[in-house]
Amino acid sequence: MNFLSVAKMAPDDYVGFTFFVGCMAMMAASVFFFLSMSSFDKKWRTSILVSGLITFIAAVHYWYMRDYWVSNMESPTFFRYVDWVLTVPLMCVEFYLILKVAGAKKSLMWRLIFLSVVMLVTGYMGEVLYRDQAWFWGLISGLAYFVIVYDIWFGTAKKLAEAAGGAVLKAHKTLCWFVLVGWAIYPIGYMAGTPGWYEGVFGGLDLDVIYNIGDAINKIGFGLVVYNLAVQSSEEIKK
Ligand SMILES: *C/C=C(C)/C=C/C=C(C)/C=C/C1=C(C)CCCC1(C)C
Image (cartoon, rainbow, N blue to C red):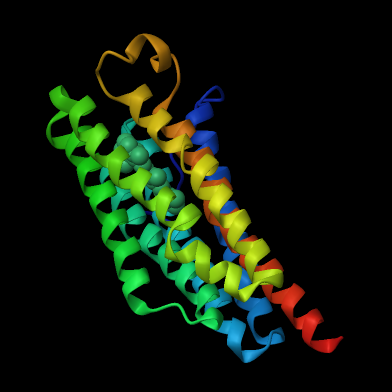
């Protein structure tokens, strides 16, 4: 990596553009979360810290991915999955942290983490190792994703959120929508970037642009929901 010189960018390299903007957005979000941390009540600080860690880990990976893209004009799939395998489990931790007030157990957190790792490892198998059977690995990955969605929408997590009520319930609901709609962006990127029966449907789209948009929405959006929860609940206490 060279900090002082920069590779030439093609003016129509819109994929590269999303890598640069994504990198900057993740850095800015991290500064925002880290600096706001101390203004909140102690019980929310870990949640805000995790929000910042998610965008910070992404910022570092985007720094490398941006460089990798400009130098090789090739998807930085390896860095992408390293980033995901660190940040997606942290998003599961975030669910646990906000539900702790309602008595969430660590087993809920580990269950979500396990499912998310299965989802990502099988995704990597289809995208990199066994591209000929991408549809099969994508399906297994999709099943793990489906179980996560089911768990947070209708399982233990949902019951805990209802027990907590107020701002926590609202934040949980919003995070559930992020997972259902925001995370659904990724399988579209996957289908756009791997061979399979679905090529005709998604083949015209660019995998990296879709993943980069998904990351910006989900990582920064997720963090802002938690930030908003901390603001809201601090106000509830003041009243
Ligand atoms: C910050 C990064 C996030 C939130 C990444 C999330 C990634 C997924 C939800 C990926 C899901 C996939 C499927 C459901 C099937 C196809 C393979 C994947 C890994 C793209």
